[in-house]
Image 1 (spheres, rainbow, N blue to C red):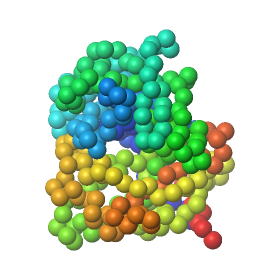
Image 2 (image 1 turned 120 degrees about the vertical axis):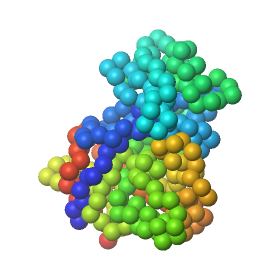
Image 3 (image 1 turned 30 degrees about the horizontal axis):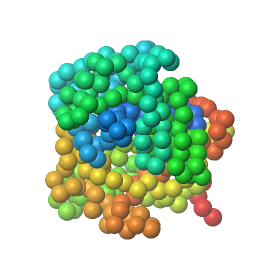
Length: 287
């Protein structure tokens, strides 16, 4: 069945604000530049919006030699800093990303101090960069193995059906609860053309008239990050939409947890290609 790409998103720093794109390059590591930077605490633990929802208001913008970081209050920029990509001889350190261990180059002190203040942490933070020489040791190598993306939780791609969001918002509207937008779910690829949650029966997505093909691995179990308002960096009242999504689309083996979006990877690790909003892809389903 044909579907159309309606949105593409990259997140240069894990758990910070994303960037909407018209087109992008993809490889086995996901969208080019996706989650190639990571903020860690003094023990090397990855910082996320689960503990620091204000990270949603840190907007990274890629430059030729690194990033520009903006802390936003709504549409206003409160402060900003330019971050230069660390050189290959910069100090390295290990980071914990769920059950995986990944290494990165430590960025300059000024960037680390700026982030510590912008996030409001009570301990020093560090910004890491995943270089060409960096390695990631997966805790569950049979799932994504070397395809695990830089500093992402696991999957190289998160693929989301726009009509699944529509189904959720219809439920929220009927309950007189705040509606949510696609940014709450931090997808990489958004498509339309299927009924809500029909993507969970799919096995692959193939770009029309090309060999580029994504394997749909499993349903993504969602956490408290979906309750963070991406515009304000605060949690929605009553932790909307966590419980509502869990009731509408529970994880098969954990019915108290909500599922939304499909973890995906390239079928062939050697593939690369370009994808764009408006592209037509063909979804194959389980027999």
